[in-house]
Length: 292
Image 1 (cartoon, rainbow, N blue to C red):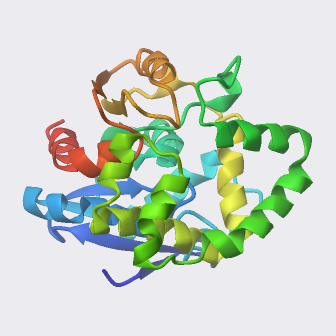
Image 2 (image 1 turned 135 degrees about the horizontal axis):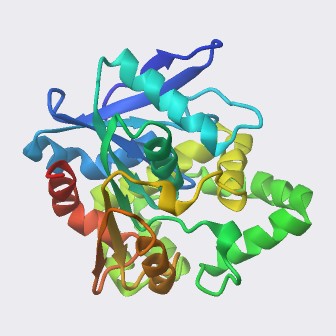
């Protein structure tokens, strides 16, 4: 595990981040999923090192080691990224976003396109406010959206109740049972039987929940509210990856989003799901990203 780093932000808050891969390599900001945290970037550590890529993975505000930012909006994120890369004396950079990290990558590309060379989106979340129905979403996401719109206080209470269970580290012998309980696609379950992949995904989630419920909930609100820009506003080169078997966000929804970018190369991968795609294809995702 890499040592946690801290950058002091304007106003006294801190942003926690870790680095993976090659310390002197091509800089790539890693945007973790939801619920997740900076250590999800372990997925990219080995291939990034082999390809000469420097992965910089920050916790979002209120997640794990980063300070809570009350009433934050998606539009607040690019400023934090700029403070981070200025602290590291980085000029241009690329972004790799997994699942719930996608809108943060889009927002940064829209706000500071002169510094963002390209972004790679892997199993990216869909703009929920633009959907006419939620049939293409994971059932859990449909329920959460319904509670957020109709019973927000109850949703917070459910998060509080879930925290002790979701921040608990299950014994290794129980992992097969846990994977079965999650009702995953066969490709996702198979990829998560790898110990390193399992730890990268689930330890990063546990860190988020152990940090604070309010941070996880604030992160969730970002997806349910308008993002403040259109997909068409993302003009930097986009590399869009999505598994045909993705259960979180149906491939038809992903195809609709990919077709709206002005400059996008999309890949829809057969026999891969929401988890298996970044686990199994990280080397080619990274290699493609730095080729732009």
